[in-house]
Image (cartoon, rainbow, N blue to C red; front, top):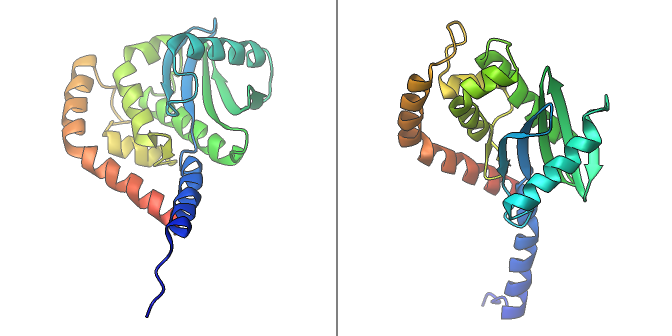
Length: 203
């Protein structure tokens, strides 16, 4: 007769699985600031990390103060690993835990920046970003879903978002139309991709 695991063993297994869970969420936050440190876009994926708007903006201000005058690409602050990149009057940040692989975070940062460069026809500056903000949010959501990295190839992101890089950037109206269509078509696809990544890591 096959031995059945006792409740204590089963509980221990559940704890081991739960301990793996945070490692699935590589990215804790993504935000873009202007050259005065003001928020243009921010997404926090860990509900326990700075849950209030005030805490988030304080963290962003501290990060900006630490990084905006340096030539480095990585910083460590408040127990977080932060990779960042600047372009004209913009600062791009990707945040992970202190134990997170910096190369993984940098891959996300480079994908975000390069995709926006394609989308904005290399005009990666504040005015163009604000004019295409709906598209920027859509790009971020194609790269990261709930803190899980879904894509790191800018060409693939562009293809998924369906931007035509050989034409002018989408107008505000066409972006809104595209988003409504995209949300209707891909919510199931994103969840499926997330589940596949999760189970492949747990195996």
